[in-house]
Length: 197
Image 1 (cartoon, one colour):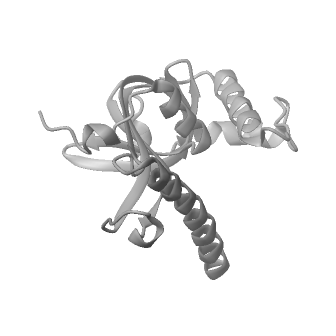
Image 2: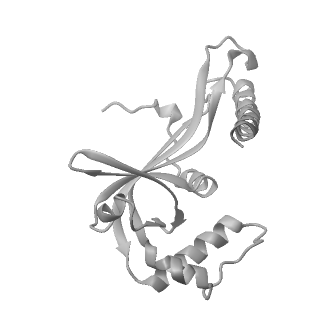
Image 3: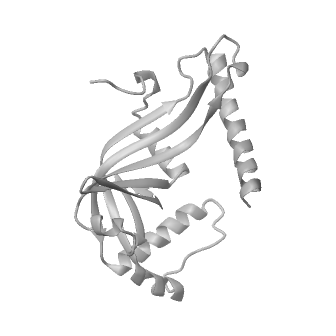
């Protein structure tokens, strides 16, 4: 069996993968219906080996998430081009990235109270650490909204951490690659948002 990326770019530490999921909770959820992939981008929260979320009932993927189907879920961490100019040794250009791939079976959540509690928990998690907003269970807008969403949870069966972070370089160059990834991500986010908005 071929493992890609190479072993030194794999990270099987569940704590590292959970940290990525918590830091970058917007997931790519992929299911397949008659050989056609259906893809949604949804924030998910991690809780004890499960991923919990909700989606619009009108989303074509909602039907597939009702019947215990296997899904693939991808979480994307920071990524970017690494120029050889940052290294102290001779290197070629590369791309560094952090990705977490999971698979698991999805189970529909039908109880509106449980869906609301999951939405409250998700809001609390996403508002941390300042908690400038609290979603209350008696919020009238949520009570109207709940009729239009489908809750679900995914039991994680497999985990793959793909952390390509110049691990095959010298310690000094690994540190430089880390700093370059931080710098490039901050700059590219700022440039993109200024252009888009």
